[in-house]
Amino acid sequence: MFELATADGQTVSAYRAEPAGEPRGALIVVQEDADLTPHTRKMADLFAAKGYLTIATSLFGAGDPADGAAPAGRTADAVKQLGAERAYAALVAAIGSAAPAGKVAVLGYGWGGYLAYLAANAVPGIACVVCYYGDGIVDEFGAKRRVPTLVHFAGNDAAVPDDKIVQFRASRPDVSAFSYPGVGHGFDGDDDSHYDAAAAETALERSLFWISQFVEGQPPVALKNAGAYAQAKVEKKKKKAASDDLGPPAD
Image 1 (tube, rainbow, N blue to C red):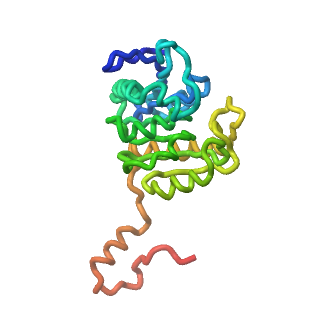
Image 2: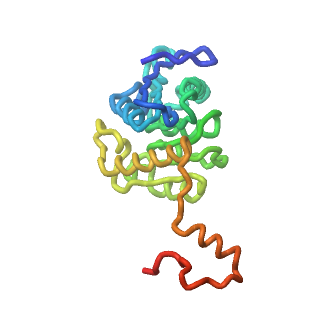
Image 3: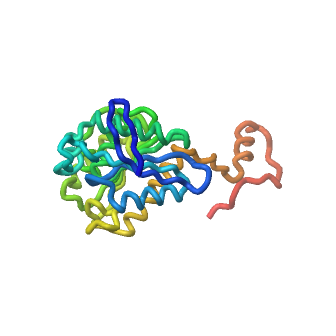
């Protein structure tokens, strides 16, 4: 663990996981519970193994809030109790610490996912966000997303009814949202009673692809015969010889 100093005088504890080689970029992981769980640290190590410098924040440390107690409730209530501005200041500090590694993504679980969703439109320096089952997200029908946003919903989350997920997806076409049928809140955590290995693996694959797109960028896809098709558009009047490559055979 190490300490992050924020611009407004906070001190925030964080866990840092370094990749083995040159970083492909950076990732900030925002906790789900009152402190960093073994699962949060495990995921930070996993993302580091994938090549990203990863910092997992512990926003509810000593004196955070003043009595040192964990916030009551989930997601939206927790963010309100901590104070969004205080949480943003901690994220800014974490992003500043990680920025030398390249572009920075923010990924959060539970209330951390809700905070990541809010931070995408409020905190500078974020390349993209990934949000896991933050139940406050479905009530956010505000401004268009400023950065690419991926949301994983639990299909059997008592706090997020299916009709709200449907309504959210219809109103936010600028968000890439997935719902995992039959799984509960916390399905990604292997220390959670709702853990579902298949859903967790699928969500992880989608998250890694999302992060790779917007943190490091994917190389352009070379389509077979792309040059031939481009040539054909320019030279419409040129009769093709019998040997011209017309592309792959039809199925």
